[in-house]
Structures are given as structure tokens and as C-alpha cells.
Image 1 (cartoon, chains in turn brown, cyan):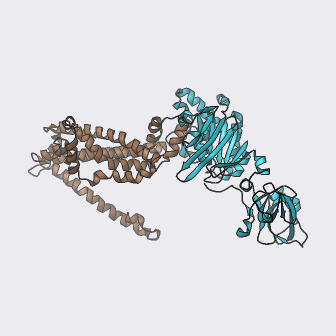
Image 2 (cartoon, one colour; image 1 turned 45 degrees about the horizontal axis):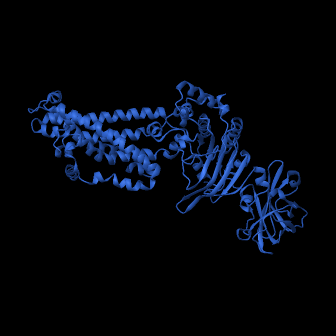
Image 3 (cartoon, rainbow over the protein chains, first blue to last red; image 1 turned 120 degrees about the vertical axis):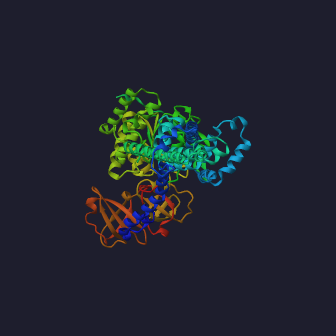
Length: 264
Length: 370
């Protein structure tokens, strides 16, 4: 940022600063990543092998844990979008005065520690719900709310919601048709980024799952670490890589779509 | 062409009231619009004209009063059920759809099959002269083209009423003139009842069958452009429509003493005998005689074709604009001493203001931002 904000007459030095900045940030993110990869590829004797990776799928509990996390990710994302897209649109159209309030309220899950949240939830949740791991999805919706809301809010600010909404209605579009056929297609990148953030959050959440005593993927990694730390690190490395690839894929898809639709 | 048949509904706005907090956006507005008529709602920003249009469209709900279309009260009817095509001030095309699909959108909402609606949309794109642009996205079109597509989109549903909310105000002058004519021609041909909101008096006068001048949520006057210009009922209308000079004068019952003449006053009420008022005089109702000895001085002259507009400083601080036939103005140049006189005709008067502002001429309503 510092390099970008420099006034024009010193921009000549900006290139160097940018490189330095990029290098520092790059190292900061790359070191743990590379270390994890190196550790996962090492055997106990110090020689290099891919057995930790090839063995992941066969480890006891992996399939169940990963499957559960994927199902939770899908469920959480769907619930989050179904809740947050109409809400964000409503606030923009009908209650712009409440925008500030919503900015604050949607931040609460970040401010309140998950441990506090989970104790509250376990206190009030009906037993039938407590007996299923899908209670976690409901909790994750709350955790994902700040990120999802902010993405959608930014997307809505970038388009003229009021005019598009009115135009669609004057042409005969009902509120739901307008939402699905006009607003959401024009909020695609915002919806995608809300999705990516939600999925990443679910695939990495440990505290709530472990307190609820469900074996999600992150919980499995931690538990399995005690048996075979190489495999466990390999699994978490893979999870990270998958999330990244997902993110890159969605971004590429979005850029391509935007270029076609001209909303980029 | 299938689009020739839309016809038009009659519209009645009955005693509309709408309040936003402390502001009365509509304060008892009533207006009858005949089938096929093009009515312009004209007024300065904040006069309630856009609110009136949005209430008619169903986007806003009035606090009191009724919106009647073809004899039926549509107050409780949702906007998507009112069959009113609308063109907006800001570009309102759906960015994710090509022009043709934008035009076909309303037909899709009505459940028309893909082939029929593509065909109809193509016809409409031809009608607005953009047959070859159907495959382009809104961002690939110029502002004027976007508004033409928006017009085609609004007309595609064969609306009972066409609503235009300052559709030309974001465009540059040249494009605006062309589109103005195109809208008028199409409206004539289709006979669609049309309500046009604008703050540009020239636009209103040149396009509308009748112009409704609004101020503070109320109607000042509804009349044909000619009538409005020639026989304004209030000083506000007189000044808002066309160019108007303010010249100080003394009221004397039903007449006013101005520029050495006694002229009949159309609105003499509320002014004490002998009090100082401003007399409203059109540039074409003033004339001047040269000759070197006059008490007024020519400041500048602009050649406008058959007429020339001469700006003259009267004795004192007041300046006026005078339109003269260009031949008559040919001999004048800045600095000439002249005598200014008014034609013998009925005049409007307004509260004296010229003494304070030091400038007697008020510009037309055109050009003010929203």
C-alpha cells in the first residue's frame, strides 16, 4: 500500500518498494507453506518420500471426517447465501439507514470468541439438533456472516441496485424474479467471494467442531497428529492447496465471465 | 409492425399527497392526462415531479389520494402489474444481458416464448435505429444508444403508460436533441400515453402536448406550451418558462408604470397602490431606439440567426435582454446609448427583487441540476 500511495514525483522509487513489499509478504506466507510441504515429504529417518500423501486416503477416519466437512461446507454456504443475499439487498433498498447498524451487528461473531458462542448454543439448542453434526452448519452460518455480508455489501455498492430493481419491476418482474434474474447475476463476483470465504472457513474451523465433539476434517488432523504427524501435516497441506485451487478457479471463472458480461 | 397497437390509457392523479419526513413532496397534486397524450412534468429540483412519476409507476405509495388508470384505481397494484414502461435518468440496462435480451426482458417476464420475444425485440431495436447493436452489452454502447435501448425495452411490453424520468439529462446536447425528436415521433406513432419528467423547460416545451409546471409539490399551471409561454398564470411560471426580464415599476391599481409607460397588469392582487414591484417582460416584448441620447447603454449583442439578443443596462443597475430582428440590431454596438420601451401588452408582476440583486433578467429553467 505504501508504494501505491506515494505521490507522483517519487513514483520512480515506487517500483523498488513494491518489489520489497511483495518479497516480504511472499516470504511471510511461503515459509510455513514450504516448511509444511518439506516436513510432509520427510520420513522419520530423514529421507524424502511421498508416502505421507499417498497414505492419507487410507487413514482411519479420514474419509468420514473429510466427507462431513464437505457436507457442512455445502450446507453452510447454501444457508448463508439464502439468508444473507436477500438481507443485504433489503438493507440496501429499503433500509439504507440501517446499513451502519448492520455493519456493526454482522461484526459481532468476529468479536465474540467461538468458545463463548458455542457454550451459548449448547445451552439453548434442542436435544434433537444437538444430536446431529449439522448443528455445526448453523453455527458456521453465524461465523461466516461477517465475511459473507461484507462481500455482498461491497458488491451491492458497485451496482445501481435501486434503478435495476425498479427497471425490472416496471417490466413485470416480481421481487423474487428480480432478485434471481437481475440482481444476483450482477452480483456474481460478490456471491462467489462470499462462497469462497464461507467454504474456507468451514474447512478450517476447529474450535466449535472440537467442543461439539464432532470429527470434522480439522479435528481429525489434530487428533491424527498424535499418531502420525507426517500424514497429518500432509493432509492439512492438501486442504490448504485445495482451498487455494478452488479460489483460483473461481477467480479465473469470474474474470472470464466478467469479461464476457462486461461487469468487470 | 406489432408495436403499432399499444394505444394509451387515460390517467388521473387525484389529490396526491406524499410526505418524506418534514418535506411535502406532493401536496394535493391533481392532474388529468388524456389517452395518447404526452404530458411533461416540469419544475425545479425538489418540486415533486419525480415523486409524482414514482407514485404513478407504483414505486412510491402516496399518503392520500388516488392514481386512476383507465377509470380504475391502481393504488394497491404492485408496479410489476401496472404495465407501465419506464425509462430512467441513470443508465438502467441490465449489465449482464445483451441489448436484445434487455429489450426482451419484459416479454420474458410475461412468459412469451424465446422465438417470439427475440423477434419482437429485434423489431423494437430496428424501431429505435439500433438493429445492428442487438448483440452488444450495455457497456459497449454509448449513453445515447443505451437510452434508446432502454426506450425500446420500455415500449416492448406495449405499456399502457410510458414513463420517462429525465431520460436525456445524462446525455450531451447533440444526442439529446436527436433523441428528443425520436421519442416524440415514436410516441406520436404508437399513441402511447406518456408522462415525461424534466427540469429542462426547452425540452418540455418542444416535446409535450401539455406542460405541467410544478412547485413545492403543487401544480402551478397546466397548459399547452404556447399558452404557458404566452399566458403564464403565475409569476413563477412566467419566469420558469422561457427567458424573462425583471424591470422595476410602480403599481397603480390594475396598471403598472414601467419604462415610461402604463401597462395593464394580469395579476394585480396583493400589491399596495404605488408600491415598487418587478414587471416581468419577455425579451421579444421589449424594444429599443438608438439615437445617442438614451438613458440606457448596450452592453453586448449576440447574433442568433434571424434574431439578435441585445443586453442593455437600464438607468440604474438593471440589465435586460432584448430580442430584435437581426436587421434592426445590425447598427448597434456595445456602448451605444439607447432608449428601451415595452410593447403595449398585459404584463405579469412579481415582488420587487431587482433592486437587491442588481440584475433584472432571470434565466430560463434549463440547466439546473437535480
